[in-house]
Length: 321
Ligand SMILES: NC(=O)c1ccc[n+]([C@@H]2O[C@H](COP(=O)([O-])OP(=O)(O)OC[C@H]3O[C@@H](n4cnc5c(N)ncnc54)[C@H](OP(=O)(O)O)[C@@H]3O)[C@@H](O)[C@H]2O)c1
Image 1: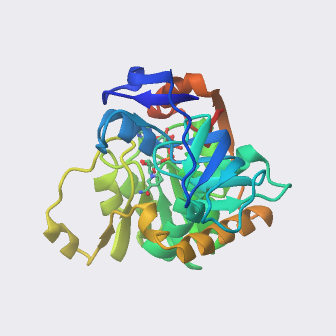
Image 2 (image 1 turned 180 degrees about the vertical axis):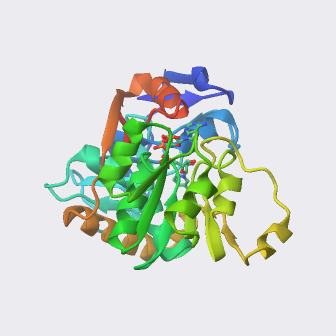
Image 3 (image 1 turned 120 degrees about the vertical axis):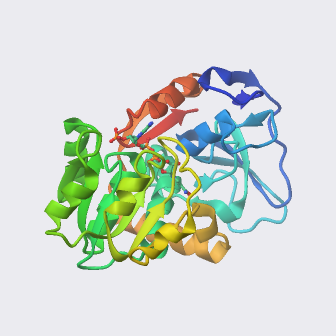
């Protein structure tokens, strides 16, 4: 089968469109013929070596498609069922062997592109605004890169839970996207001082929590935008990894700092099933809009990585398999 493989960590030029053996079914897995694979920042971290894995490796953490084979010990799925799933580094491929405990059956009404697009960013946004910091009515929340894939979903969810949302973006075009997603206020974080603007917008109250997937370039501004006993959820490295911090900085204002990963909020099948069914319900009821901004062919996956790393995304990026 065709797949994208990385043999040596590095930039997007290291991604090769190659023939690899089609996976063979295992008793506890599903073999899926993919229709779409989601592209996520984590794929660039795996490719570059920021998150080291054994090489060579395939890429891709989510997808959608049709079940071609069902493992002997698997129940609840049949050949021909359409599914969306989370996986570990194997969805940029024609076929993926996946864990049925990380898959959801798709109703006829759910298109395969939207299904692939909602899993990783949707579950991240949902679990983080419920569990990393439980957003509630009356909160004021700062969300960086509010027009990005995860950012737009976090904005919508924070509004759904009754918060006032301040979003940061780099451009007017992205500001409109964040505003359309529900952001009440915009800060142009590449040219405005974020804590100063947060102070103005909140009349000095500052924010209850910051969701920061940008990382290195925004960490200090996030920290300085919090009110006493505020929470900083630092969850990504879009601009680079946050340097090591001195724990005593948390004493000024009794700040709560988290650096969560999605997987530990959906570790058990019960956690995954609850979060994914809540996510699908929010989408189906129209509370959460999934915005696919660009679709690349599998063989052009390197272009998708260039696109995401250039900060061009205004929603979800998919590979059509
Ligand atoms: N911890 C977890 O489990 C988890 C799960 C999912 C995602 N994440 C993280 O969440 C972050 C956002 O992911 P996403 O999929 O939503 O990405 P995305 O849609 O591509 O959004 C990323 C945004 O970051 C901004 N950005 C700022 N500096 C950047 C830089 N130097 N290079 C590229 N972009 C830059 C850009 O918006 P502006 O142009 O407005 O600045 C860009 O649109 C990533 O750091 C990712 O690793 C973490």
